[in-house]
Length: 426
Image (tube, rainbow, N blue to C red; front, side, top):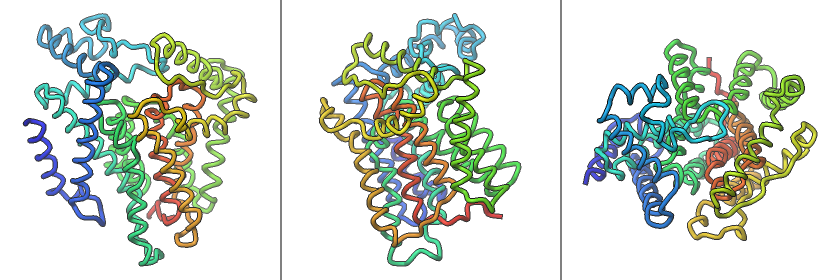
């Protein structure tokens, strides 16, 4: 009942406020999309609860309940533990709060547990209401991404006969199975969509329209993404630097700037690792690979698979980069699917491949132009796929972790053909 009430309220908000609409389409489409996401989130919850009977989602919900009880027992001690003043305090036995994630920054499980704690208070402990709230957050993130790539959708140069076709293609990234499944569940991926979409949109506005307000929002969105997925922010930063150089040197080919920044940055990082071992990227990824493989074997994970093999040195790493990208993009193969629930999430690669092939064969219909943000997401998706291909040894985790990469890739390729180079408006 409570979940239905919140669902109705949020649908009314989407209907009432124009900023929550999708431009150029009926208001009922985003409402239907939001309801679809909520239904997908509920389906994933039932799958985890009744079929798997374990997993991250159930752990997050259970530990949020424990945190509520700890807060009631001792609010001061609880807040001290939350803010790290007493890291051995009340939360020392919370598994995800203290989980070893092999993350050189910090345990990003904590950010999600705090968010889950907040929406748990709003939902009064109702799991289905929590799913509605987290889907509203992910909807906002996806809405921000849609607005980034929709403003030039109907340019003067676009033929009238192609507009409906372009409009249809623009929705494909948002109906990728991994976005609808993992991006709708009580998992970090849903919150990641909010943080990622907000960051991309605020970066666009900060570069397009210089103002103190836009710069402030950009910094806030950067901090949010840093707290939720710091490695994704690191992947995006070279692209942000390329955007800066493109704005200062608009006469230089934008593709050349992005290629120079990403390839030059990779070579500099490899060279830096020769003198400062703590920055040695191949050794770090090789260590991550071993840690994750050992953890998967100890936990008896299903669907184990060997990531792309490489030696922890620069030449071997560079030689295997294309193979790692292809490995992450194509997995899982149909022959590797052992469980029925993996069939939908294995369709991401097929859908994106069909989209790319379609656009190539119909390239004469559309403008063959590249927007800076299309390039930002394209190169970022390649870097993320590379990291996944080198390190992740479980098929289920591959499809889950590559969700943002497939979303970025689908958004970028679907925007290559008709975006005008008018991103940096004066």
